[in-house]
Amino acid sequence: MTGEPLIRARGLVKRFGDFTAVDGIDVEVRAGEAFGFLGPNGAGKSSTMRMVGCISPPSGGELRILGMDPVRDGPAIRARLGVCPQLDNLDPELTVRENLTTYARYFGIPRRVARERAAELLDFVQLGERADSRVDPLSGGMKRRLTIARALVNEPDIVLLDEPTTGLDPQARHLVWERLFRLKQQGVTLVLTTHYMDEAEQLCDRLVVMDGGRIVAEGSPRELIERHSTREVVELRFAAESQEAFAGKLAGLGERVEVLPDRVLLYVADGDAAVAEVAALGLTPATVLVRRSSLEDVFLQLTGRTLVD
Amino acid sequence: MLTLVLPRLVGVPAASRRAASVTERNVAALKPVYWLLLASGFVEPLLYLFSIGVGVGALVGDLTLPGGQVVTYAAFVAPAMLASSAMTGALAETSFNLFGKMKYMRLYDGVIATPVRPFEIALGELGWAMVRGGAYSAAFLLVMVAMGLTGAVRALVAFPAAVLVGFAFGALGMALATFLRSWQDFDLLASVQFALFLFSGTFVPATTYPAALRWLVEVTPLYRSVHLVRGVALADGGWSWLLDVAYLLVATGLGLLVAARRMERLLYR
Image (cartoon, rainbow over all chains, first blue to last red; front, side):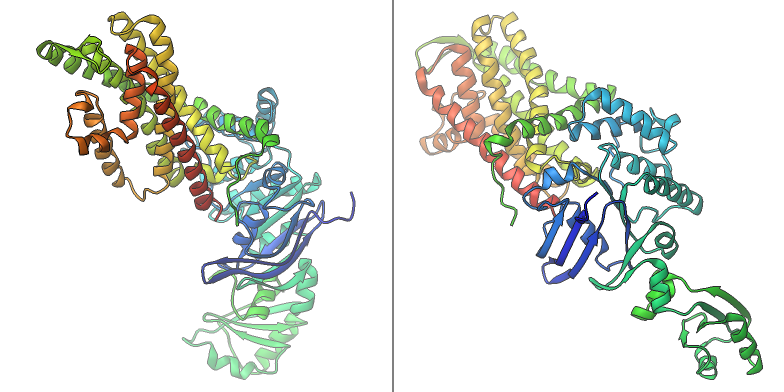
């Protein structure tokens, strides 16, 4: 492996008419890395992914993928990408197996190889028993797994996953995560977007936080938390209608106080000590929770908003 | 930014291989229900041939062609039915199905993530429409030969002519499909198609129309198609078929270019 990044963007811009979806971002993804774009809906994550997937021409800036130009060398680049889009676009007129073999043919993979790979991949995503089923009766989680399998049919150098677990129930999400983690262990370069901080924490070696088309922070999940948040967070929920009234009394406690509609967050180094201080002030919240800082807190600190609205 | 460049000569093998993979997908998607739909496309022109060509033909009697040749009315109508069934088959496959695949099944959103480009999707879909259209034409020609409406050798020449008709209408249909907004728009397309079917020199020689109308009719694609197939099947019209072939080739090329460019704009957002 050379040090040449697989994806390199400089001042990358995507505009739709007057609307700027991606507003000059710099990104580098290296081989073997699991790289994430974390941000709320509308942050420009999917537009970025489409540009990287060579199905959306950039409106400005520079983009190189696998050392090539996405506009000129689209087919050559796409031949080495695996794409799992946000919305499943499986072929409803084909069976589960045919979805893989047909897709393989789009890459010019010989029929025999396509059949072998389809069988292997169906085992990998645990859909072997549904091989001859149509796509429609599959559950959301199964469809997503099939789409992931489809993205692997050309043995790609980079796998792009746009919101891989959005809309899945917790059990289905864990199954997808587990499969993606295996890919990561096999050394496949993963690029994913998500608005779930737990997903980003579990899967990403490095990530950028996006908001309003810009990158607001970059680093490993741990670095981001250390840089932009405290070690611990105390969540206080007061029984009253407004949390604001209590927040005022908490000022000066810990590094920062964040007031949300339904709770107050105290950013502190030592959670238990802070809880004791709250009690000493004579306040009696309905519930108290001490937890470690997460990427959610990083996002809140950086943008003043929560990730999932 | 993404202007359509015709596949450069070096890229032709890869491009045609990718287009073929799109055709192949349709073969894989062939299911029993679909066969019934396919059968209807074959039966329809036969119904017209028997009801009008043979039935009405018994009242009309024989016809004198511009070249002086005298033929039965059924022999006059049959090549027109061949041409219009090639049109119908190609239009159904490209316009209706392409629209459904693009807008509702979102099939091509998945395909463009592979090396396959919109131009190759268009080419592959057209190739598939031609497999279907070609089968219709071959079957219909067999019936014509069996009924003595054309000779076996003439039928062999008429076959590629009918395929060319299919290519032209398939490409035009595809280009049209990229402009349609909803299924309602297809009613309009169906009306235009039916008007063409009735007035393209299919049942009545265009020479019987008033001069102004005749010119209008003679520039429509189905007229050129009927003229070509009839000329070949009945050995009438001298070298004027060359004009028809040129017309249909241009229509095919234009249709493909417009379709590919529009698909590029719709898919590469």
